[in-house]
Length: 214
Image 1 (cartoon, rainbow, N blue to C red):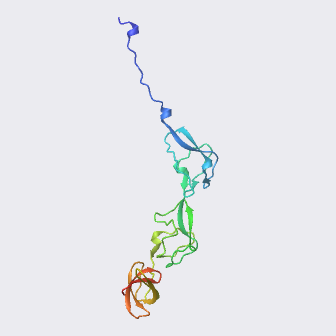
Image 2: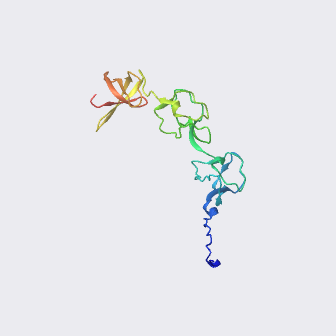
Image 3: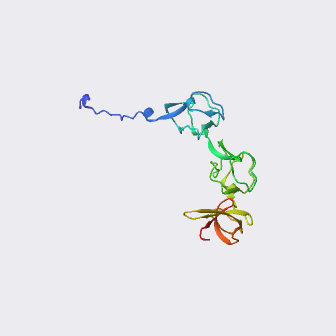
């Protein structure tokens, strides 16, 4: 017989500490917050917790993308992605903007919106000098790219300013547009002083650049 001391023993496999493995950084609420209320960094504390079927949500809080709650939350709850709505800066109509109008500082303003934001929403006041609305935009409505079209900066038979520029000198004269024109488009104009027909490039509202040799 084999001595008992020599009998083989089953060695159980050592399992890693599952609790340590499952620990994750989670934001936890320090106070009760009602639906629609903004969340500030001071309202949250970071903790390492064991999570099961839970996706922690830890974006950065900043002034450009404020948060509000999507539902009532209680102190001690872990913050999930579905618990918050992240704000986005969008350009809106400060008052009703008629169709065919250009966008200006007085007609527009920047708002923070959380829901119902279209993918082509504008988010800045600048860069729309040569565009105009193709429909009436109501007060408070988000302004979208599809609501804009190229503006006619020069209109047929309207007076225009002719800019005759060379390396050493710039001459400003007046003229009359012979056709409609958009920014960067070539148009025919009549030079009021010489009576000659010339071709120039639209460079602004009522402004046409012509070559020095014309």
